[in-house]
Length: 309
Image (cartoon, rainbow, N blue to C red; front, top):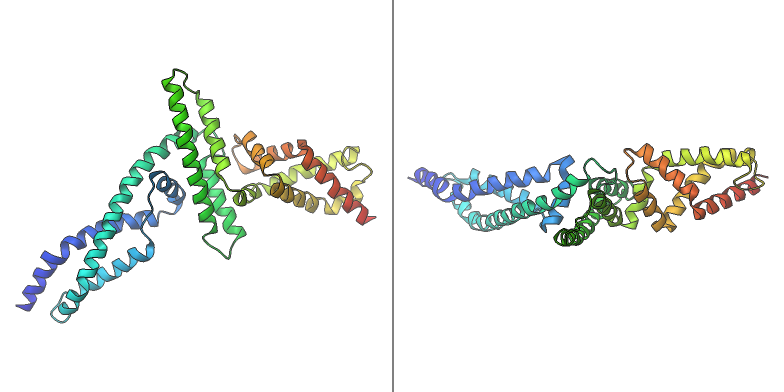
């Protein structure tokens, strides 16, 4: 009779909430573990105004669910009834949150896809690239805090979505007024929003990923100009040649930290570059045309030459 009761408890009492929880837990696990999809998931969450339930909560409910299933037997049934009410209530809240999350993802996905479709094949600096670079750069710079990059990327995504909602309303107004923006105008506006959405703390890390091609290109230019007497007047290449690479990298790093507006403008102007090498080369050319950067570089080369004499 007790075994029959256990069978009825499993079939009539436990299985309905268990099957609902299992379905939504599988959905949760898909979103939580979707590696390369993570950045896009985070952006869509922001656009939809939702957050995935915490991993600690989902996994705790899963462990309790497994334990409850093991307790449905004559020896464990009394403990099952002790644990089941609390688990049922919490799992129901979890499932309701997942329903809300899925609805928000549907809404956020519709908003985000419209933007990503426009920028997909047009620009190197798209929202996905900005968010990914922010995460990678900040995580490298702040290894003591694993979540630092995630915070910067989420902030970039949030800022971007807010900007694009505002810009989208403006574009819609132009369409209704009979003056629709061109595709190039829309792309320019979207990519500019992405660049402006990256925080200053992440901007240096973003540009830092182009440091090697940028530094190599500037070094080549600087060598030619020093030899011609057009850079750091009175300095010979022999006095600074061994230090030149370090001087240039230090100058770039300092410039990025003190001239944020100029750096953003450089990225905006060269956003159509298709890879980091091309981007670094184009930004290097822009830096050498920038009076402030060039002045800083000259001063640093002159100081190094004075120390070498």
